[in-house]
Length: 153
Length: 178
Image (cartoon, rainbow over all chains, first blue to last red; front, side, top):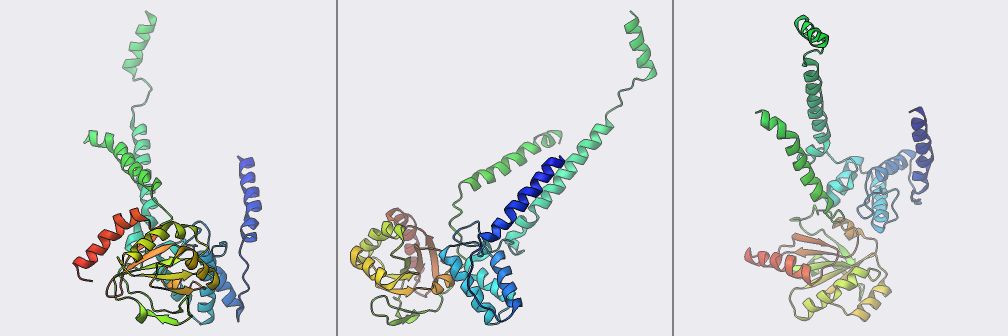
């Protein structure tokens, strides 16, 4: 068990840095460090619509390049993160977010696992309760006498 | 009551399995467009032939097709014969968006393969593409008489897609007079 955990940690340590090593390096310039950080956060959090399992930071796709440039432009123009996310949402929908917004359409996505967890918990606790309610396996005095009689025979 | 309880896990399993089975065959590369029933975004881009700045006012009265293409795009060649046929028989006007391409390459492509477009505008930086939620050529939009986006088709628009999707959609537009 400990070995397994150790393996996981080591794997994560090896794989972790690879992720950022593949990041696309753009030469966007920002006025402040804070803007730079917002750019990094947004392009990590937004999903590339073309290469579907990469974020904008990691994608070489043409559209990812364009979207990174747009994010840069909007940050320099002084738009808030919220406004930039809204800009993306209006064009690419929920898909663009790795963490979709909580809306009527996404409620099941957000809370579905919780529902399964609760239902599963109820079922398991019922099973456990029932198995405890099973009459004990020790024999009553009368039964013991009966058994003894049978064995004596 | 007991029976229901007995079968409940099986029912839950079948329902879930049904959804997941369907999920296996969903085309995840085709994203639902959020722009359906919204007006076409504003733009001002150069015509591929004469670099004339072109905006929304130059668009056909509609309904018309808006096709996103590029000379580098192989699937665009696959759907090209359909567009040529539509344009030769005057079925519906087609406007091209030359998406993230180079002008000389685009002109070569039109020269070699034929030009089915009423006109093509160049979107070298993909700026209009972003406003349209485009993520790669080819994509085709159906725009109605009021300049509203009514349908978006991702990837190749071949004869089959034309017959099965676009013909009914355009008939629908005609019925409602838009």
